[in-house]
Image 1 (cartoon, rainbow, N blue to C red):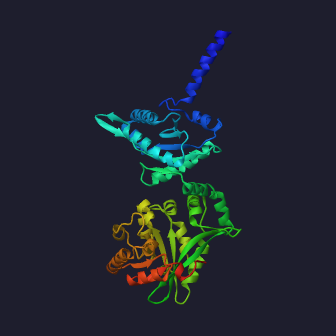
Image 2: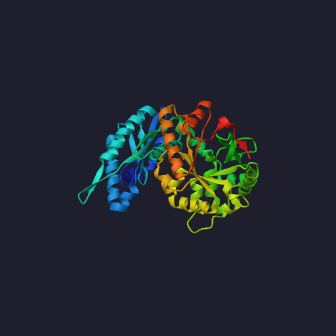
Image 3: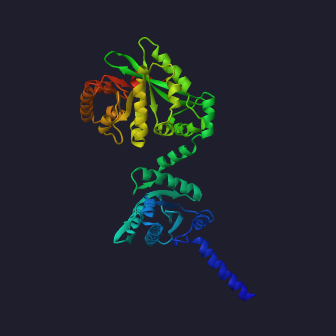
Length: 428
């Protein structure tokens, strides 16, 4: 009986080691991570690094999974060697790892993360005389005594996502702002709630006037979609627009008829006022494909004087969906609809886009008029004004909030502007 008990203990010990270790890299397993974090009482704050190899799929596709596995093993060994006593590395799956840092606060963990990033970059495998080197993005978070592993991983994953969006091979700590954005995203409405809001008429349009500074009158309005909830709360498009765009193929439609009637009303004024609509990148991608019928355009433009309609294409839309953007621009301009390039001057603005995509209006982002470096901004705006005369497009300065900003765009020769200085946004 004693020998049987000894053999059973040995067998259980081997089995425990087997399930606690990742079978490829010999890092700790996700099961071990759960056991270590959620099933042991903690009295101090620790930290976690969420490590994700950049473009690892490319390694597998280019060199094969055997090389990819070899790189994963090298990366794991390098990270394990970087650990202090009490730290450990767990493989979450694929090319994702979690590093547990014992007794670390967020600031210290962010410093330690740089050593692990160097460890990943230093690990490599050789294929046919060429070194295959990986990089990683790392999200850093604290692990409080009252916090579970899944919540901590969600926080670290949010930081990892933002690190990747900044260009990869980056480290980002989950400070209060990162956590706030993550919680806000988690509290966003569901697709079903967006659909119900559309049926109940809660999603509508507000308008902001666009002024002709020479004629001293409103020349147009920009329609801004909003969700006015029954309790009076107003949600901005960032909280629901992507969900609405994703639901388009399932029959979820923006309030097109309401938008159409509002635009017709503006066009019938004396003098008439044009209406501009902003097309999001995701909505464009989900609804406009070469050779397909764009049904929402018919509903929106039904009975509307096309010369009194402007479609605003955000610059990121041009970058993300170049072919769909060209399809839409060509279809609209052939009908007489005008095209505006919105938010020019932020992100990856490129003057070549003004040559490649025929536009009628260039909308300068608010950062130009709200920047403290007035002289340099004014010089750029003057240059755009001269270009607009040659290429035949109109310039609208966005974000005017003070008399000083209005004076700035006037001095640069810009004759059209919009912003809260001219009046608050109104529901259409």
